[in-house]
Length: 318
Image (tube, rainbow, N blue to C red; front, side, top):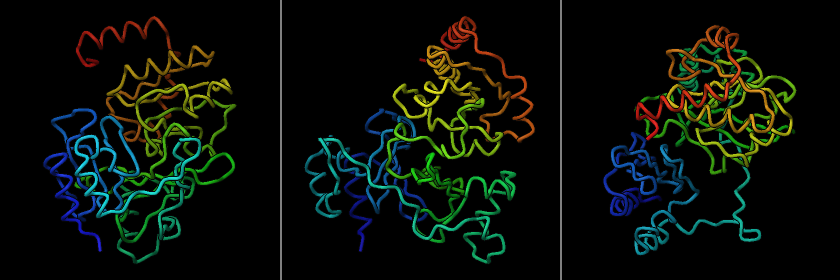
């Protein structure tokens, strides 16, 4: 039996005070990596030891390493009660475990008449997001009845050959710590739902997977805000010279221009989509997105420099 109380005691001695979600599974601390002293966004899954900071994206399959940086003694105690995390090594590189769908995963589209409260809650949530039956099938949305992923809508991702390579589970409750839960897979090593993409057609880039539901068919999430030219998504775009429409969140304008500049250096055509007063594409209706897409303008290098200088002057970059 897992001694949650003892695990919380160790973690609070190392990371400080925490908040625990209502299921007693996720504990949120101030992040030891990014130094964000005001927000408790460093979330540790008490049952598995996985951790993720929602600010700096520090993450891992075992929090032992993060504990050891601060207190080797605490790390030893943590390992003694949780067991050492078994990794597979190849040429000194950690090989991530194969991705599997969460146990008990069921499709929401096949559960519309279910009396299961877990299914009903997730289906009602999709209605608040104005998702159609077509969306439930197209994105293969699902749920699980119990466990740490209960009351989350789960979206699986498949590579170009139809093999599962990732999944993300979004909480339907505002009070749950950690809006998203994901498997411990480096984000840059795969393309989310490449199975749905056509590299020959104009591709819309959004920030998160659930933004996709407001886009038309050819769209992909960058899964965060940081750009990496080594990422599988960037490499796929550059290799295929796929025309791009950037539709990123309103709170990251400098990131949009960095993405545009980097892609243009590979002779990729880039347009900028203005999402207006909306926080992100996910807040838009499909009609609003399509109308904004029609008005997307080609990225202009010099206008980008001007915009960045305005952002710097306002102090939002620094």
